[in-house]
Length: 91
Image (cartoon, rainbow, N blue to C red; front, side, top):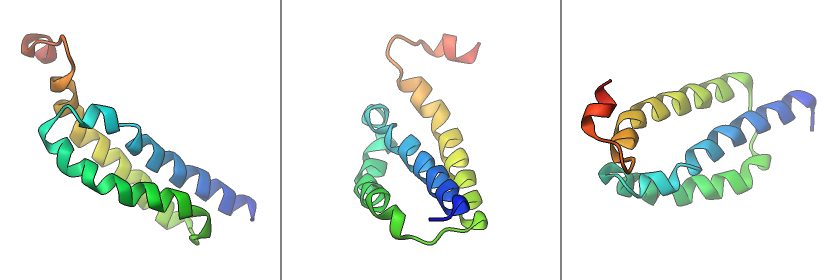
């Protein structure tokens, strides 16, 4: 495996693992139940990622999509955090 391929693999794996690490938090929000159904696909892909040919454009698209996904979940996850009132979220 070339150095670039290894770097691409590490970056993609990091994105996917970041999303999968949200599983416990997503269980607490309504839209999370739908998203969790798709996690099996992500888990399977992560196991087979070494067989996928990746280029810089692919990796960049996944990184941007991951960032957008995390940003869209920021508010729902913050609201679902135990012990946080609506007033504290607005500050």
